[in-house]
Length: 283
Image (cartoon, rainbow, N blue to C red):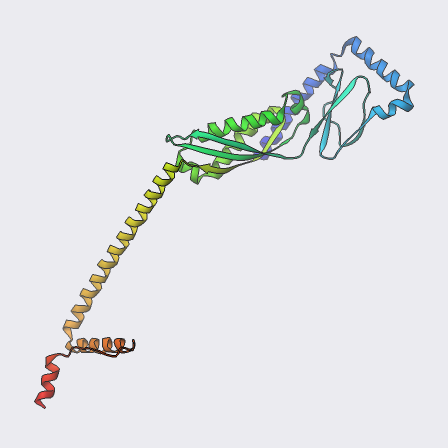
């Protein structure tokens, strides 16, 4: 869906640019065409010399927008490689098509739940339509930077602090969509937007840390209480079982004695029931 939307926007831009260029190319006027003729004649007469002024070369990552007497003469930018211009009437502007990245300066933003935070980010964009980037905006790079700052404020102003800390990916996608839609008439394609850092006030950090610590302590107390309750139930069941069989208590005594002896103690005091002693005394 995003690819289809991008293709449709490029088609719309292409149609609008073609209409604009058609209107401009047809409005050179008699004087304009006369000057173009004189420029061509001058180039032909001084061909060995003017050859060095007629050819231009642009790199693989660049495109050239040609102006003839101040008007765009072609429906698309020239390049890459070598191309021909008239030296007296034509001028060119080179446009870099490589992806550009820039940092959004830290912005003091008031969230939806009235918390002041400082947020910065990074934006990646490129020129998708060289003609629109030259003809529709004076400085596409600077305008995109300013728009990114205002978009960051507008998007984060609708989020609360919890969403800001947990849903960075969704916020980045929302910013990318807003920036891409706003810069589409300028021939700019915003490829990626990332939130770098969210700085909270120190008082809020201490309050959040105290809240988290209190939550952990309360959870620990609940777990300890549940453990005590389970232990008391187990002891109750064990006492009922032992009370039903007196010999089980003697076995428990012997088990306890074995456990103590394993710890290499020198003195062991172990209680014996009077019933056992009286039985030996009778014998």
